[in-house]
Image 1 (tube, rainbow, N blue to C red):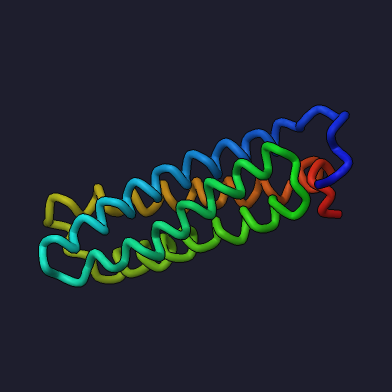
Image 2: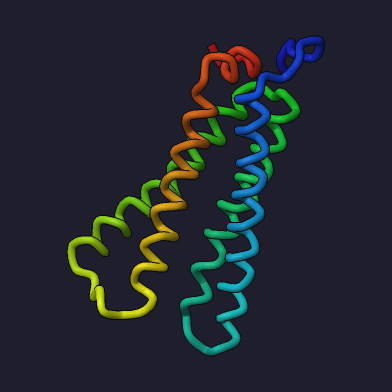
Length: 138
């Protein structure tokens, strides 16, 4: 724990915690759907296990940021780099070789861009000086 019990939580820390919890919940639900694909007999559903771990990690550290735990912001921003990296790679791959005549291509691209931007916002909120001061991460 840190010594922020008497101080009000800054808006950046509140936003980082709330966004971490929301992202973690969405990712955990997606992981459950991936795990349900195991019943189809293909191995694609096994990707749900690390995705579920990522979702739970984001949920847990988002809650810790809201609670004012020391180093929770650093952990949350490190976890947020995973979807940012994967989305960035997917955006580059789609721009390089996507079949733009398919119906779902623009929807997928919009999803990857949204994920990238939200992850970037989460990392930025965790790195704000007032968030770091609140969490004792000088």
